Image (tube, rainbow, N blue to C red; front, side, top):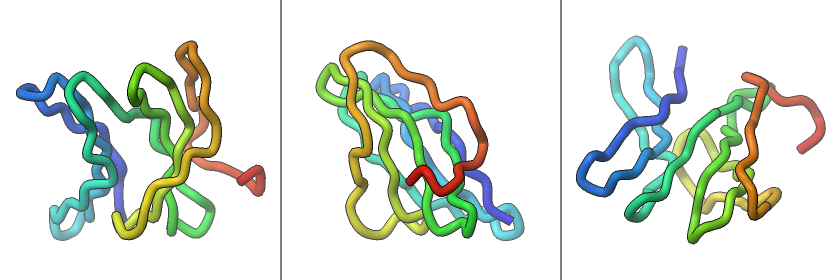
Length: 95
């Protein structure tokens, strides 16, 4: 079983998204945000291979997705000037 969490970095005043294996405690970073950026509200793909999340980057709010093993680049799915919220823990075939 794996869980996705937002983990604070107090030095950067940022929050990064991590995926942890519950059995081993091993964590994989999904994001590497810059100063005062953040990622939150993770949602798993149905097969568990990807995680979608909301992030603040360069003053813009966006909905992103990335492989849940941390490999490969993240993909910007939607961007907006105002805050957005991902309100589900799972997604459907919308992506």
